[in-house]
Image (cartoon, rainbow, N blue to C red; front, side, top):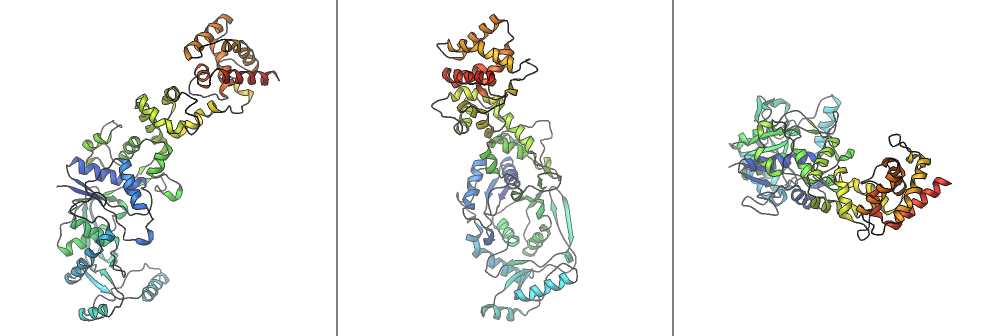
Length: 481
């Protein structure tokens, strides 16, 4: 049975490249009827951010990526947090020493620093010189029992090649002479990432490993470990990087958003997931819109490509707008209400009506407060807003229109949209004016904006009769001054 895993480190929020890896890993497991596992790789304790593990759980839940096994749901292959598995790794490393695939190293930091400085002075790259490789086993054991600090290093062959096969990149082969004898078990007894993920993948029965292409260079060393143990390696799928633009990767340090950031900005989860799925995978058709359930049925490895993908915020925003317009009025009202409440008092305004006017104009929910703030408080604006070449209006035309329409508004008793519309249109027709020449100035006068959700009639209804008259009076006074 297919078993995939997503194995993030608890170093902060789930970035979008990580989300894509999690998504592809999840989708492949679902498509193949397999199991999807969450594992926390926290061996690098210095980089761990307090609370980050809970953030990972929350992010996975928000993304809708339900895992079958994990730290907070259990499973027969647990524990699923590496520091809780620390007793597992040393016996495997010791076994690897017996097999000749690793060795004990007692080199001090001072010696390693000296060797590193020599390499830099000679213009080369530091590579451990296997100084401790040929230590007598009894001597090594004596030093360990005496309490001398040590690490366990991988014994990379001095000659030959190391290789692996990748589902996306094909056969990858490197010269062993270019590889370093990396540390497998650190002096504190914890494994390094390179060793722990191999042991965990094997002991958890992982069949497919999906991860970023930045790990391509490490995979040959992983395969040497599998070979030393006599284990079958998993199928590797190294995913191309997600770029912010043609020159750099997505990165939080440059202000690029995390998954949580996008949710907080008012992007819909479904839109983000759909968009992320298409960054490096193609359904091989013109179709772009998929629910998560549809992606579970459609995703395959054949649709992946090796080229880096550009994360285009404009495209995501368009995607999100399309998703917003597909919501039912009730769904959009529910999504929009928290954003409306940032600008308006729910007890004073008809949120349902406002939402109906906003849905086709909204691409991201965080646009809503700025789109409706004028309803609560009239902004300052210039008389130049009355100038509209298409409507053939200017400040003088606006003044005449407002004076003509004010008594109509004042005379409406049941102040609803139908009555406002009928009264205004009837009076405008009786004056022989064009509709735009009358309603455009009124819209500007009571909103202070050229672009608004709804026109003069809708805005008048939303702010009420008294406020409409107050704003019209203020506008008339200003135009007469």
